[in-house]
Length: 472
Image: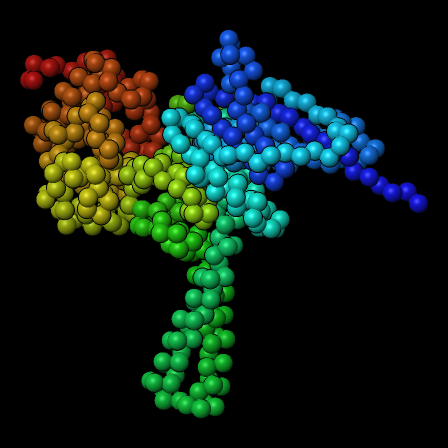
């Protein structure tokens, strides 16, 4: 009788860190510590050691195959904590060895200092969760971290040029789809409870049935109502995601609008629709994009999914990034239109307007709505004319967006004084090179890509980008 025996082994992987970084943690059979192999060179490395048992007929080299799953998990944790792109390709040195005796390792104190911040508490919570959960429970966390890390890697590799942006958006969306499974049973139970309460009140109190008559009709109508309400489009993926966000305290009008846009982009990508554009904008993509939304969807869904994971596991990570993203998120178009029609901008200071104090509407959200052809130029003029002189280029005002867009749009209005003010400021911006894009002509290309046709701005560019400043 042959008795199979497993042999203890260890695999070690070294990954470079920034000089100011310091990380050490452990979970399951993984120990990660920061080391400085040569102080004279100033190189800082994160040494990840993974303890495994390999089969007797395997060589030491096979230890890397056994340890790869745990290495992927460790890289997922590091990427999520730091927002950096940690991959197996960052490994600058690795080795594997077989031990004669069973290996033992000491647990170490969790410490994590990145970008001058201390993330030790959250990293410790992640490691404790892994150590205390069952294998099936850990599978969810490992899947979320790995899917998120891959999506971030694809987004970073694209560098805004569209290389993997479609794939990145799908990968981030998979994070949301994975996590809604943890909330959908509660959502369905809540819906069923409300259906039951409604029918009891309607059939018992309004239609005056009681006893067996009430019970019979409740069973019949409950079945029908569940088929109608729970089997149709009301319980869509968007509904499930929004319910999860609501449970986490992250849902408002802006976030719900973002989810609608993400689902629209995701459907365009997943269904592989026909796509061709005769003209493109910088940076030039290597492939045609399957979705047409260029308003930082990748940035928003990266931060959103990170915050959702953090909230689910009760971590404080990504809170500041989420708060910044919220300031840049536009509310739904109906909210913007109502804000303009009710003239709510008139009672606001420019600072209040830019901070989104009323309905989360900001000058940036109005600019975006016009570029998307959801509101008219007259709406832009009405809402921004009274604030434009307080929104200057170079002055940091969150919610103001890129002010040059306002000048470009309002240069075409009929008011001579305001139109002149915008034209002069465009010239000033060009002369001082204080615009955000690399070339001021890219503003025209971007707007015309979205079928916005700024008449004077095009004429100004065609005419050599010169406008008299004698009226200043």
